Image 1 (cartoon, rainbow, N blue to C red):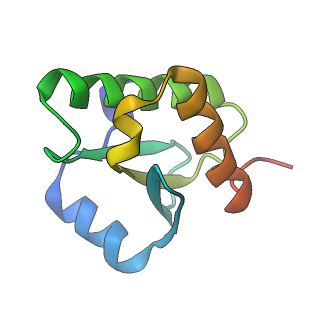
Image 2 (image 1 turned 120 degrees about the horizontal axis):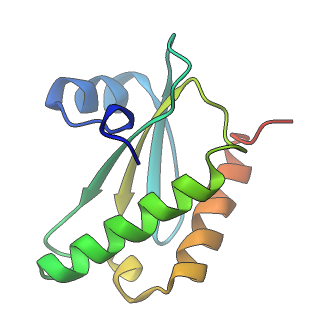
Length: 112
């Protein structure tokens, strides 16, 4: 995932939290907000409650990989924030992918 496709600034996070829509399942919460630019951007939040640094970085890597693979199918003009919940720490890649795909379908974020 390129650096231009990542959300890092606190004001961007706050804007998406306040103005965006959200959907959740047991493992993840996704906030999203429409924007003018055509690039997809993603911000990740993995709390210390999830585990140590190794575990948190692993969860973030898995989420980024799912976005890389699903990038062509997801509507482009949106900003996403993904918050990982505690069960995400023990999940395999396939479980993370199916959980995020479930949320994308539920939120109707796939292109028709």
